[in-house]
Image (tube, rainbow, N blue to C red; front, top):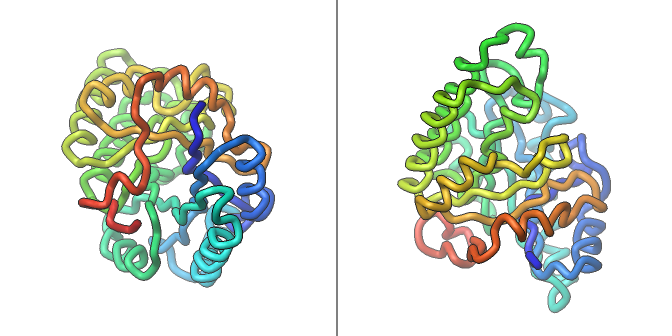
Length: 266
């Protein structure tokens, strides 16, 4: 059974439930040996301390977040390994801003996620009323995924087919083109990806990324790990059995395996 979970949130981001310690305790009960706390980073691409309540933590909370995770790491030492992580939006043009922020703190890893595409959140279904032809949306989304990998900011990319969760199915030709290009770009970058089981919670038949892209990434040698993307303590370890089946025989990426290159935050 998979014994790690590197993608968890808590109440600080404004759209999750429970405090960090509850997630750690839930992981211990499941026999998970290593949990990553990876709440949503402040939105430095917008002005102000808390420009979009309900989407990410305020800037003023980041230091307290780090302190809390490090204190809980000490409290639970010997029972579970607690990793200090962060999930940050990929925001073109703000790479240096985020790079400076990440350098201030001893993060074990940072997850990079494309949450915004063509002016709307990836899960905003209204976009499909504005633009029912998915070709432009999907092409731009995967371009951003590739750019996030090339940025060098991130250790792991989160839910890399999230745009497909509530969107219309694009043509097979478009998907093949975007999946092929994305797998090659990720392999060239050295960044890892996650099997993110929130894809199942959102009603899909499989985790993120979609199976054809995951298979291309694995064939190209892209490192892969597991994350529940939990937003409530009871979601920790969600669908681990399904992820285990999908990743049978695959050695999972862990932060300590990346002490060379972009994983130097350990």
